[in-house]
Each structure stands twice: as C-alpha cells, then as structure tokens.
Image (cartoon, rainbow, N blue to C red; front, side):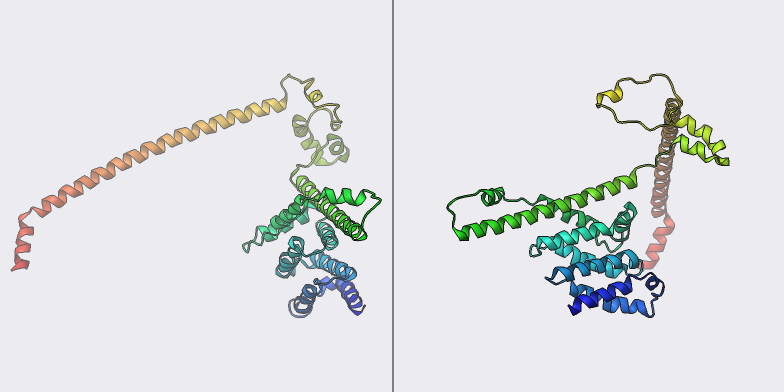
Length: 321
C-alpha cells in the first residue's frame, strides 16, 4: 500500500505541466535520471497488478513528456524491460496485455510512431526498437492455441474426475488469456499499420474548399489546380464491384494525359542526352588511353637508348674501378 501511494505521488509530480519547464541539466533532471529511472526499473519486477499498472502509467508519462530529455534512459528501459517482458516466456499473459495496451497509448499519432523509428532504429547506436517491437507482436500473434483443451473444457461429461475437471478448467482459462493476448497484439499491429499508411498517404485536396477560402492565392493557383484535378469536385463514392471501376472509361485527351506525354518526351530527351554524353566520355577515355600508351613507349625507347650510350658505360667503369 505504501509503494502504491509513493508511485501515485511521483506520478502526480511528473505529470504536472510545470514540471517539464523546470527540468534543467543541473538540478531536477539529474534527480529524474538517477532516481526516477532507477526506481522505474526496480518497480517493473512485481506480481501486483495495481503496482504494474502504475508503473506502466509512469513510463507512459515519462515517454510523452520527457522523451526529449531522457532519450538514452527511455531507450534502455524500452529495450531491456518492455521488450524483454513481451518476449519473455515467464511473464503472465495479463501483464503482457496491459503492457501492449500501454504501448499502443504511447503512439496515438503517426508522427509518434515515425519518431520512434527515426530516433532509435535510424540512430547510430542501432537499438532497433521499432523493428523488434513489431517482430515481438507478430510472434505473439503466431502462437498456436490448443483447441482440444477448449473443447474438453466446454464439453459436459457426466462422469468426470475432479482433478481432471480442475485441470481442464485451468487450461481453458490459460487458453482464453492467450487468445485475448493474441487479439490485443493483433489490434496493435493493425493500428500501427494504419498509422504508417496514413503517414505515407498524400493529402487530399478538394476544389470546393479551395474556392470557399477566397484568398488572394486561390485566384492565382486555382487555374493551375483545375488543370490537374478532375472536374467533379466531390470525392468518389463507393463502387458496387471492382469491375464497375473500369466500366466507363473516358478516352478523350485530357490535360493530365498531355502532361504525361510531356513528361515522357522530356524523359526521352534526357535519355538521349545521357547516351550522347556517355559516347563522348568513352571516346575521350579511348584517346587518353592511346596517348598514355604512346607516352609509355617513348619513355621505354629513351631508357633503352640511354642505357646503350657510351657515357653511361664510362661512368659505370669509373665506379667499378
């Protein structure tokens, strides 16, 4: 009870908005690094669900508010504790469920998920937190559940030994918790994939919103946008089938098709220019190689004539004598 009360007090202190502003490298930040992170590592090893949930909320608050100050410390905790508990075979499924739910709350937006990859996986230390996290969640989803135990626990038998009934009941509860764990990890992976798809998708632009703005730039940019954006300002509705998407195709030439042809001609011109430049480079290299060979032959003949000269022979005779 005292530990829960102490954890609640520390959580209230670090979650206060003014606490982030007073954190400096000289004073409170040193306390935060030396004591708070150390006690966080010690408090993770617990079997009390209330303490474990408080520690998770503590880590969530540190990650959301202090990750720009505690990048190395939070990376070590994420690598050694969080991923270690997810990959451990001795951690309870209930604890893993709470841990995966806390991880999903750490990245509510696509930008937070990309920040994890940029700051740790793309770092020179190469902790690979994002890759290991996705790999661990996918391994949890791949775990197989024994269906025979579930059928045996659900089947009502008239004559059944009490020990066997207790064993089947405990196995059924364990399989149910494993199924909940797989469902939680799968939903987390799906949410991460949705975040990544949202991050890489281009922004949608509608002409109605651009016309309604009435700004000075809209009168300049609107003719250019109308040449690239389709005439209908409304987004496409849901189609009844996939074949109906290609039922009525407009074969008339449009500005988009003309712009594509311009791009193709420009690409062809660039390719021709590159080919002609390669030919010039090859011809120049051949000429330089021929000149180098000719110069080497001249040097060789000069060396032979110098070795056969009478002055060299006289100098060698003087040195020998």
